[in-house]
Amino acid sequence: MTVGADRRSVLTGLGALGVMGCSPQAAPDVGPREQPARPSVIVPREPLDLSVLEARAGGRLGFAAMDLSNGRNLNWRSDERFVYCSTFKMYLAAATLLRVQAGEERLDRAIPITRADMVSHAPTTEPAVGETLTIAELMKGTVELSDNPAANILIRELGGIEALRAFYRGIGDESTRVDRLEPEMNRLDGDKDTIKPARSVQNIIRLLVSAETPLNDSSKSLLTRWLIDTPTGQGRLKAGAPASWTVAHKTGTGGYGPTNDIGILYPPEGRPVVVAAYYHATAASSPADNDAVIAEATRMALSALGRA
Image 1 (cartoon, rainbow, N blue to C red):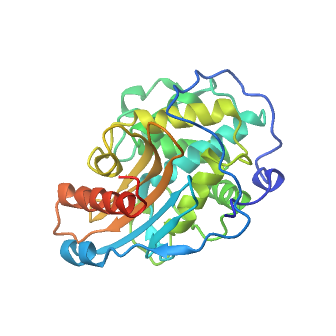
Image 2: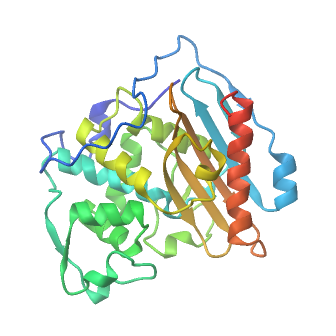
Image 3: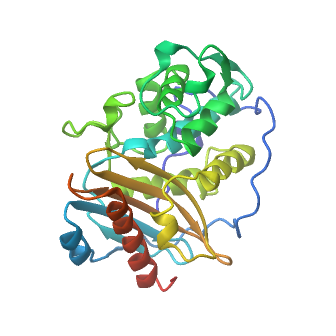
């Protein structure tokens, strides 16, 4: 299983690794964090037949799951492109944390929040207009509550769209598109702002599971804590995982149908399963129905893996 480029390439355009600007609180234990051994051979992909689910629900579903206990790799439309919506905010936070590690950013740096920054969906930033939020607060609001102005501000402070694109390339992702800011990025326009489910799984492993991650322990702990604490998407990956499992995830939603969820599913014991689900539903389907499609696909994958 290839997990991406080396540490030096990740930092291209982002600076060299350094000391964190301040020490975040460690995330609580969510199960064994042992690193997966590298298999001696490439584990082939296995098809996960979601055709009946997709036909019943309508729309187009992309799904990939990697069981890190044995390397099994399930896929349905996993090399097709899907608009990622707010799932990218997990990666934006990781890119920002790399700048903190490099000494190019500080978690406690205060950023003025202005009325000009406001776009739709601003649960963290709207109440702070005329005041300031720290980089850490902006990341927390971006990951946990999917705040759109916070994401745009973080992209600006990162160095713009080109810098975010460079981050993806640095972790070995040569295919994900980065073209627009929030909320325009949610609008379908060819391949703009799209990702492949299989690539998303590889990115998550690279950043949060692999021993070769460019993120240090403090950064991983902080990002994982936000991904666990998010209240969004209760009916998606979380609903598909057994109740005893812990889910660290990031949702993404478009008002005209796209319904996504990506993350890591931690069992009480043993290694986790990494999942990326991107569902482009029909405009006529309800949000609850769309959530249920992702939950059912997750249940089917875990059953196929013998992890249900």
